[in-house]
Image (cartoon, rainbow, N blue to C red; front, side, top):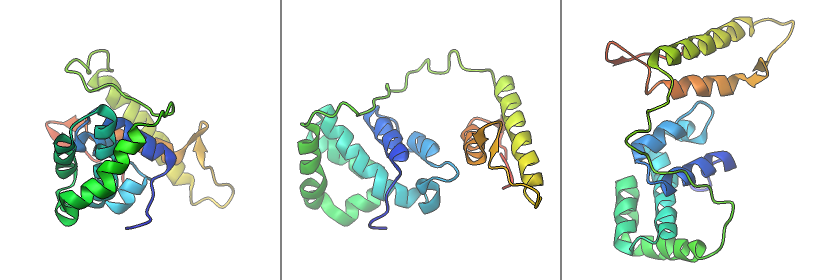
Length: 187
């Protein structure tokens, strides 16, 4: 796994989520989209190699104590924390994160922390189901035409098919029918 890297966009979102204090489960929902490195390597490896280090950097930027940062790192990836140990974490992750946090970085993105009223103003479940159905139909039509030798379309209405699939995946955690998760798409 050494040498594996997230794309800049993936890394930026991951860092923003860590800075805002989002939970590992919530960050995984954002990371685990079709076509991402996170989806490719799986949750356990993602937590170990990407999320746990991001929590350390965010902790340093937020001015948390070393113990608080270690606790966050350990929660993010018990596997990595156990394997490296606190002393190696301090030397290899915490001290470099403190040095990095001391430097001015205007490009750092910040999301606000999740709020209890975050669902106010969101579309209704009925509206979300409608949008999902429209997206699914567009992807299905595209996939049905993929076998055609006449032309290959990589976009639908100017939107990449991979982006549409990612949007469908984003609906997965919230789209429920009679209290159970429903399959988003079959590809």
